[in-house]
Picture 1 (cartoon, rainbow, N blue to C red):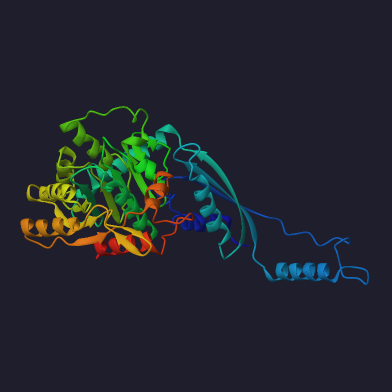
Picture 2 (picture 1 turned 180 degrees about the vertical axis):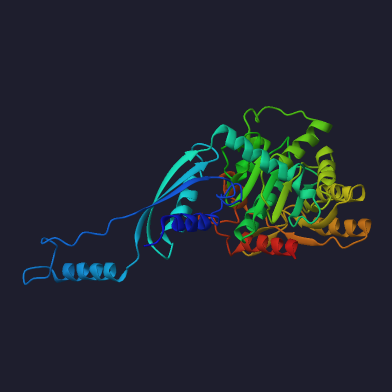
Length: 403
């Protein structure tokens, strides 16, 4: 007979591969497994006389099914155990508790050397234990994690010279594209005055607060944070200078991001305080300039790219939004044409390196309608990346950026 302690140790080792979806660490590393108890199960009693059997008046199908089940039981000679796993969640009523429970169930039932029946008992950590966990996590960071040497996260700051060019829509759809392509993706709504990512992702909840450390809200596969997620965010915000910069520092340092592959920042329009703050806090960020075709937008868009002359930030490329409207097979240039290429050419000349026009996005009413309904237009209703039209265009943009 297998030793119960050996089984308990083996299950604990298997649970080290169960990852908390929010913190990105194993449930064992986080101290969420309080105890594992394995108890032998008595052997099954022999079948009684009234066990269904085949007869001239019986159902042959029922008899065959019973025979098959008995044969399977006889073939499995492994010992049987009840395994109770005591789980302590970081917060009561954690919305992802069922995900964690399902993973634990799978880890127990797939154990090969015995028949294990899992029983999951879910509680929450004590205040002191949670405080110690948060202190340990914060001690690992101590500062903005994205500015450390060797960080592998690709950071793209989405900028525009003026409002109304679809910068936030580009950010939302690009983030959703990265996530759909399998990248661990995060996005910060750094447009403090005109935040819009919560609406575009259909987010109506607040981040979970773990003793002062925030868990980003995940929607459509993207980890998000925005001032718009907090109570009273609909009131006018009149932050300036140091306080504005502090908001970005908090989003970077006080939110548990894990180690995302991609981080997108939706910047406020223009070249104000937040753009400078991003450049200072994230010198490894790459700027993507969004414009529309008409000169009144493209001329101003150049200024947002020229911020790279003042700070150590590379301009990766230009995206021209609302380039055309397709009607009966004809591309109607409602806002004129050439703006994206003008921005590309001027920035290439001013900065001394190639700043390509990376994409020309059509004017598609569905982008606005679907986005305002809370789903990025590049995704279908199931959350998969569309293979046609806007989905293919954003896939190409994402692949260029990661190239």
